[in-house]
Image (cartoon, rainbow, N blue to C red):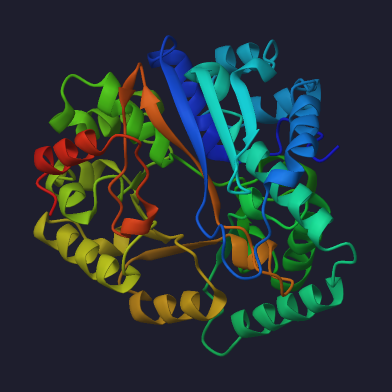
Length: 395
């Protein structure tokens, strides 16, 4: 059994789920799976693994939250008691998920149902697909090589002038395995120091945060702002509606805004002086990170906000060398945070799967993101995508 706890997911799933419970409990959604590097050299077809993936999802749906897990969630200042009470009754339902083998050798994964009851599928299903894939394609994993690579990263992070550089783990969805993920986290904690006294800031994974005494990290993901396209008053105001709804729920907590659902230009048009002051910072997840950082710093200055008081989070396919480059560019000019995913939790010398599960419909209406990296776009309705570009003045 790959997933043994419903806490084995990213924190932002719970923070978004709480907003769904309180503000959009009737929303119906659809998610679709995509493997961005399917067919690439070194990437085997997933279709032969369908039965095993289904069996693991069936096991996932047998889980419920344990009392100690609920107590841990309740201890977080931004998690409300009624939400924890709801989770005490919560189960994932297998009827909302279908996994199908395609003639191409790939798989189709569709998740459809109430947003409140499907939002927790994404991360564990991706982790299941990854672990099933690697335990079938790499019968004898080269953990020695993984440890060598991890040690090299640690030595790079401990380089001269980098004592204030902190990284976080964002790698649950694309990890090699649950056991390897835990080993990586334990090693980083021991070698870099955790929390305020070390260079390892924490993890997005709630289970390991609880188990290892780490800080759980996360705010919102793309699906939240995408759903607002269908749930807000009108499409053009959907990004503003999403930020305002978030602020009403969390009252100043969890104040990191995601900047790439409509691209940086549309984000900056909506992220006005009010939001610049209200939110603690913004997260980068596509496009040139150096250009993005310069644009955000200048945007804060134009809006009469000292960028040194705001946090810029970088989380797009980071490696340790790229993280160090970004740190050196922006050190002292703003607060900095770095979330490293695949390169931390799935770097043993094998080609990692570039897999995602994204929301494509909400309340029967297409939804999409228009990333600053076009290959990250995902929408099943080209007419809607064209309309979205027109509405948000995106080239």
